[in-house]
Image (cartoon, rainbow, N blue to C red; front, side, top):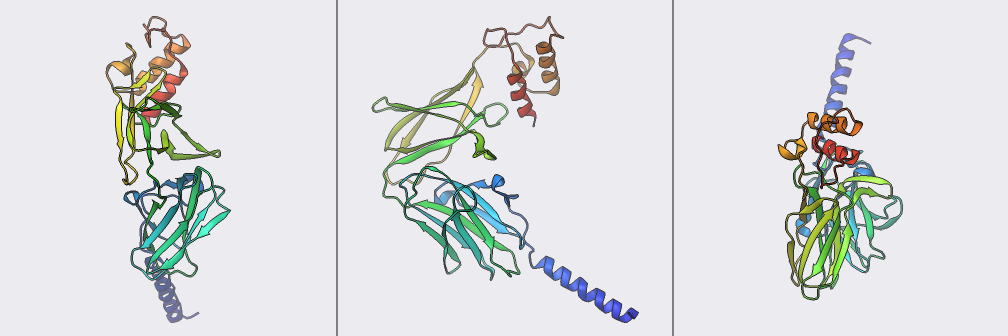
Length: 305
């Protein structure tokens, strides 16, 4: 090959490569990397909880999960923000294989109308570009509950008030102030069908509560919320905002991590030494039982992450 032909070939190849890269000039969205089911973002029902996603390359697939309530009806909508490419929007069972419905398209808007959810559980939404799409796509996604219902959900997360990490296995209780009836829910550990979802950890949800006033509280071992939380559900209101419940220790203790309120590696080392018997002269008072376990160490390690 002559030098002239080589140079021409080089610049043509370079042009094609750059053009293929710049056509998908969008950057990954804040929910990446959600190309696999285990990294699916959690979308709450209600237009105010809409999410902005991008399909930033031809192989990009967005997985989104949401909780459907038995006998409720839903409308799933994706609105494309400019561009000439179309997307594929589908509602699937949680196996990621069984399709329930696919979207209808009109005027840059894709929608799935789901007449009735058969059972309360998590479901998946799959969004991907159609074949031969040559540019990135930005879209807004939201879910509306179209059921004729006067009930609402009370939901949110339980977190450690100090280190802000989610806490699983917390008993969250809700009391109807008008009649004194109560229900309880154990906050999730992030696992669903043996798959860990990081934004599902510490999650709790009470579905289908009638209009009225409620009192929330939570506890786990020596952890409690500092004061009860009061919630008012009104008619015709969109799903209420998530309620974050923060827990703190109700126990008196002279352990360093509870005195200076600043968890450090030295605190964890000191506690491990106490557990192993290296430090036998240290005074230990946790809930007055003179005992500290490896579970306490695990909690501290989570705070350092």
